[in-house]
Structure formats: C-alpha cells, structure tokens
Amino acid sequence: MAGGPPAGARRVNLGEGGELRVEVGPDQEGVGVRLLSGAAEAFGAELAEGQRVALRPGQQAAFFTFFGAQLEVEGAPEVAYEADETPMVSYANAHAVLEARRREAKARGRPGPRAMAVGPTDVGKSTLLRILTNYAVRRGWAPLSVDLDVGQGSLTAPGCVAAAPAERVNAPWVPPAEAGGEAGEASSAPLAFWYGHTSLGENPELFRRLVSRLGAVLGPGPRGAAGDGAGAGAGGAGGRGGDPSGVFINTGGWTEGQGYGLLKDVVEALGVDVLLVVGQERLFSRLSAELSGAHVEVVKLAKSGGVTERDPARRKADRERRVHEYFSGAGDELSPVAQSVPIDDVQVFRVGGGPKAPASALPIGATSVSDPLRVARVAPSRDLTHSLLAVSCAEGPEDVLSSNVAGFIHVNEVDLAKKVIRYTAPCPGPLPGKILLAGSIKSMAT
Ligand code: ATP
Ligand code: MN
Image (tube, rainbow, N blue to C red; front, side):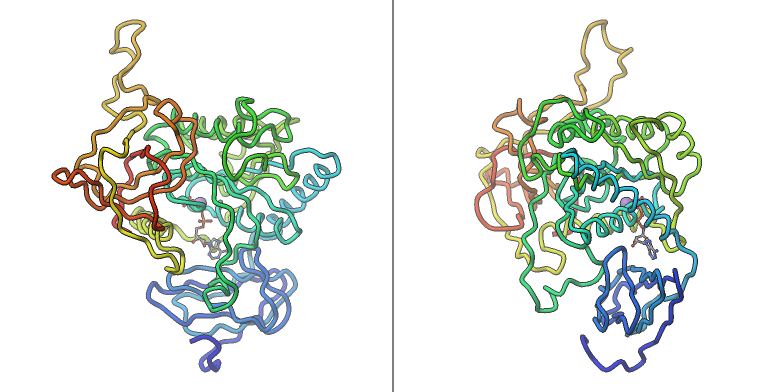
C-alpha cells in the first residue's frame, strides 16, 4: 500500500485558511495524504513536504493550511471535502495567549498556564487541546496533559483521572514507527487515579476527591494555590505542575446541573487560570459571569464544522477500542498475556456503591452505609467476569483513595472451584500490586 503509484490520486488546492477534511471508512485501507507544496498541518502536527501520511481505517483528520497548500489524496476515503471556514485562527490566537504566559512564567520561574477545555459533547474539545498541545510541543515546551474525561481515557484506560507529559507531537496519522521506522517511543507512564465508571454522575464525590488529589500532585498553579496543599506526590507527573510549559485539561461534555458545579470545582482544585469554552454561548456567558476576573480568563471558541457527533453506540465502540489499545497497543504491538492469580493472594475493593439512601432517611448523626468514599472489600465472584480492574499502588485499604494505580487487568474468569482469577494483562510478570479496584466498567475488547 505505502508509496504505491498515485493511481487515482486526487489533487486538492487549498487556499489561505482552507481545510481538507477526510474520514476513512471503518474497513478502508490504503488512504493517505501527501503534501505536494506549501505548508499544512493536521490537528497541529505539521506535514513535511513530499511526505505521505497514512490514515487508519475509521480515522478522521483535517489538513489545514494558513497560507495555502497543494495536497494529494490517495485511496478513496469515504468522505473528503474542502472547507474554507474554520475556527483555526481563533485557536491560533488562544495559542498565542498561552505562549505569552509560558514565556512570562519561564522568565519569572513560575508555573505555566493551566488551560481547561469545557463545552458540551461533540464540539471538538479534545481536538482543540490536541492542536494547542502540539503547538506548544513544536515550540519546545512539554506541557502536562490532564484527562478528566472518564468516559474515554485518552491517556490510559477509561474510568481514570490521569496526567502525562506531552513530549512529542501527536499526529493523527500512523506513526512512522509502525511503518518500520524508529522503535516505539517509551513515553512516560501516565499518573492515573481510578474512578471506575464511565460517567461522572455515578460517583461525583469520588471524582472530586481524585481531582483534588491530582491538584495536590500538580502543586500550586499560576494563581498561587491549587489542590489541598499536600505537596508533590507520587508518580510520573510529580513536580510537573510547576513547569512553565503549563497544563492542558480535557473534560467530558457534562456542563449542565451538577456537571456545571463539578467544572467549577475542577477550576479551583487544579488552579485553572484559562478556561477555553467551546461551542456554547450560554456556558461561556455563565462561566465568565461567575469566574472571569483577575484569576481566571474565560475564552470563547467556536465549534469547527468538521467535528462529527458520536452516538452512544459509537462512544461505546471508541471506549472498547481504548481498552483494546491499553492491552494490545495502538498498532497491536503489545502481546497481552493471559495469566492467573490465586484469589487469596489479592484483595479486591470497590469505592462507594451500594444502594443510595437519602440523608433524610437516616437517623440524625448517622452516616450512610453507602458513603460514596467508603472503601469496601469485595468477595471475588463471577460478577467480576469481563471487568476492568485497576491494580492499585496502595499498601492497604486506607491508602486506596490517595494512591495512584500501576495498571489495569481484564478479568476473563473467576474460578471459584480452583480459587483463581484468570485475567489478561498488557505484559507478562506478576501483578504490580495486591490490591485490585473494581468499578462498573466491563469490556469484551481484550
Ligand atoms: P467528546 O464530547 O466526545 O469528548 P469532543 O468535544 O472532545 O467530544 P472531539 O473528540 O475533539 O470532540 O471531536 C469529535 C470528532 O470530530 C473527532 O473524531 C475528531 O477527530 C473530529 N474532528 C474534530 N475537528 C475536525 C475537523 N476540523 N475536521 C474533521 N474532523 C474533525
Ligand atoms: Mn473529548
């Protein structure tokens, strides 16, 4: 496929500010794009002149040019069209604001900007952050990416609150590594805290607790105070919150009711000082009325016409793909291994859960047995079959809420007769911890 003659290739001339949007069919191989002349980028990643970039089946990408470019499309993607209206100039302006703050932070030895993208579902929040992160990386910064979208899990498995430094440009095409180039880059393992569900409504109290834990790891932001002041913590992201490169925070699309309150809590807990509100005027005006001021800059950004909506089935499929990628790698380069562990060698816990009794139904002074932060021991049973479990770094149950996780396993079978749990892990070797955390995420994807 790669490098074949451009039979049937289509040339596209993009004018200033133009964009070529491509959607590859789910089973479509051999789609590629080549930059013939000019300058073009895809979600902030630059194309080299003459370079052919290969797109994966099911992939979407937009090739944008500030000043004009000639491209060649190989293969016949399901969708390919040119657009001359994009919000890219406003995204570039947002980048300029952040770039100025990073420079100032560097000059003063202060933490860089903490920018969070918020907005309803399907407005391009993740894409905006990808673009801004790539722009920052291209300028030599290594911003920290924080992912609070528990439904997808762009940094690690779904169901987590996670952070990892962005050290290289994240391009929407098949990395040269898979095309036989440099070996897969071992990027820093993300610092992840297990939430265990794909929806924030499931346990908002736990989400809040984990975000404040993350805030403590990041340390004070440019506003001077973040998190609960507990200082630098464990894991790969330790201390990185103080870097002038700053932090980019991705969120899910829950902006109404309790979701709105959670967004404001995150602003406080992580010391956010730049709020990028995408695609909803109402949310923008509400947030700027309540938060705009000396500490927080609220920026309004338009939704790109290229953003596509995902129905619940598509979201679930994307989540399954993320789980698959965790165990097998994006290009199936990992070899997930089926293993087993004696049930008595591990302890399984679950945070919160149980029927929710309203506070009014309890005797005065009593705490609910379904305390959302209660760490409860779970007896392994067949109910755990197909569950995604986190392997906690905690030493004991009392550390579960404050500990990050070392990785994840997928339960294939709980064999009560033989008293073993059979599971899939991304690599061979013993479990990195004895404490396993359950949630409500099941998968068929390993
Ligand atoms: P969610 O609420 O699910 O987190 P989101 O607001 O983060 O969604 P994105 O994931 O950024 O939205 O975008 C949705 C889809 O649209 C993605 O598949 C992305 O690749 C695609 N997309 C974004 N911008 C463009 C564009 N300019 N051209 C073509 N496709 C695009
Ligand atoms: Mn997103």
